[in-house]
Length: 213
Image (cartoon, rainbow, N blue to C red; front, side, top):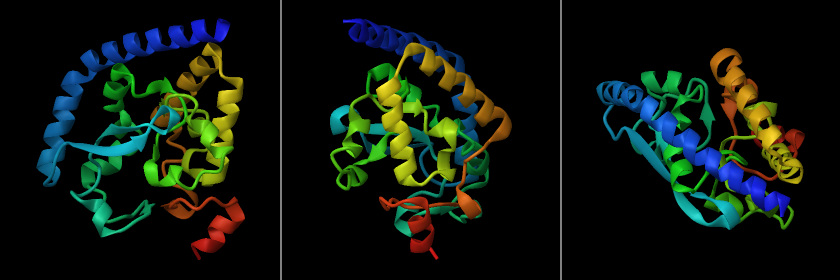
């Protein structure tokens, strides 16, 4: 019963916080949108199908940080990737995720939770890995504030499952404050080891490095 009540409180907070933030950020989005359009051809927003709670697909919103149709030009991502636009290099600090407040308001996502994953990645999950789908995905999460892209994928999943096992409103508050520090101050983990964001092998960190030599 207590968990149901706290989940309702979490949802009420999500609606209130995302609605207020969207109103406040509307002029900011307008300015960023103009800069994106001036900088490169293509839409302002990038919408990608992601797995939500229980693996249900939804369209996740992001500000476009790469050239149009970048996914057709290669996989993986690195700090000097030529597909990243000039404006996009600044947006990738975490600003590009802010349109996901729309997803939060709609109920697809929460402010805090496991980061939304690609449907193709879910197909590789073990039964234990699928536990990260037990809660709505979040704009920020426990894995993000504990290493972000410095973590291997299996480490990210382990952090997400830990979050689900230990979830509380207080933990969400802690994650939100740590996120502000990471995004606005340290900018830690935007790119992984060696300035490269890897693909999605279910491996440990040593095996992942070997796969990409």
